[in-house]
Image 1 (cartoon, rainbow, N blue to C red):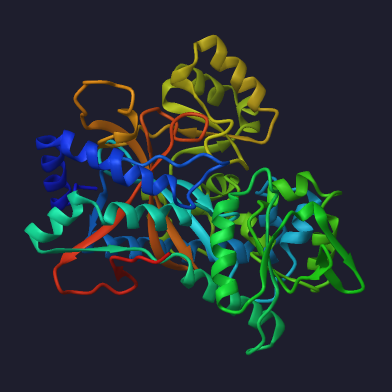
Image 2: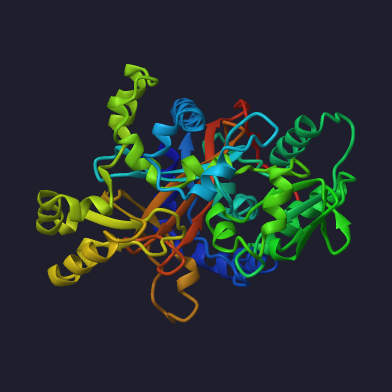
Length: 468
């Protein structure tokens, strides 16, 4: 993806006066972030003094790209639901499969999702991750786009270059879909449900959950946070501390729930009996699990995909295979060893870069042992994609650097598409200076805006989105 014209202007301005903008960041922008609701396990989430600017043309391309992806993912999920042979391509347990096949009671296999992409060093798009299960970071986007949107740098850009900046509304739009799913499930068009936002409290982003709960409460919808281990189910009612729940906004991942099946059984039983609306249902796991990349790599064999859809996937997929194939195929193992710097090992069902192993980070001896180990576990091997970089001012780094002059630095990044009921609703950028972007390495959030000529509008976006 070529840099937006305005991205170049912002970069030049930052290079010309880095000290001025660093001072504003330290005295105003970072304190605003500290005072906000943005936290990840109690710590503030870092962001640079640099926006990621995309053009209206790029936004429209992303809309078309994600629409095609969603159509393919819906076909894959549909096939899974009615074709037992197709299900064998996925590594799900018999128990998980049983729950995936349950109708959630409303249309749409994954009401909320985030598709993450990579740009390789030639600027080509490659699919990175598909998150249709516990999708998060909407609060980071909300707060950071508001804070940086009021900065001196972006005021300079708007005032001097006749451009409008569009951010992304990710809360009210999702709440409307959440309630619509419940009303489809219940058949009650005018009744507000009692809502529980459910995740394991030690894992969940509670600060984000509280923002959703506050907004729902402001709409007159009783909402609270709940840990799935403390749910109770009896007499066709599921409860949390004596509160009966009508609608669960599920933020806990399918994998984590099944790991703790015996402790969270009331949730599973209520879902199976249709005594609670679970948004999203377990069908989201078909696309969420990274095994889908191995399945998609066989798209040429699927007669339910069109030739255009097969060509589309061929353009954007990375080479992917199951870990078990490594020990079954000596030629494959030899290739992975001889070209270790070109491959990565990933758990099928994980997040935030956890468990990811890059061949380039290991000796040949270590890599060979990892290939052996991962061949016996729920792992994938995948082609490594060296990503394109963008230059950011990591202003958060300069508190203890004394007189050192702040400089823009190259960051790797992944780009995410927030999908609400199959429609592109917003963009998300995670960046870091390591080969792996994740909480165990370096992971910052870069505020993203769409740039359009002044006094024009763009469908689906709101200029200078801002709310408390």
